[in-house]
Length: 91
Image (tube, rainbow, N blue to C red; front, side):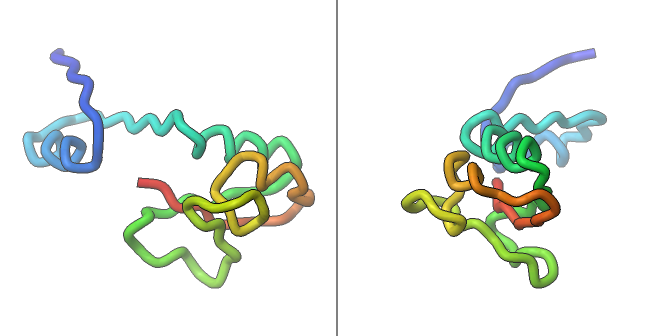
């Protein structure tokens, strides 16, 4: 088995086109911390691709901006309520 480490959407697409049997995507920047913050508060996150529309009519967090629910930063979810669901875009 051969293992490769790549970065970015283009390289992931190339790996799929080349017949990769397993593709692991790790988004370790703010996305994971944001999700952990939301879930730790009892909320739920519905991830979706940043270049596609969000699923359904969920409230969504913007990719970047000042803290507040319309921001994609972990701090924005410090006040998330249990049972609340938010869409969160990610490449």
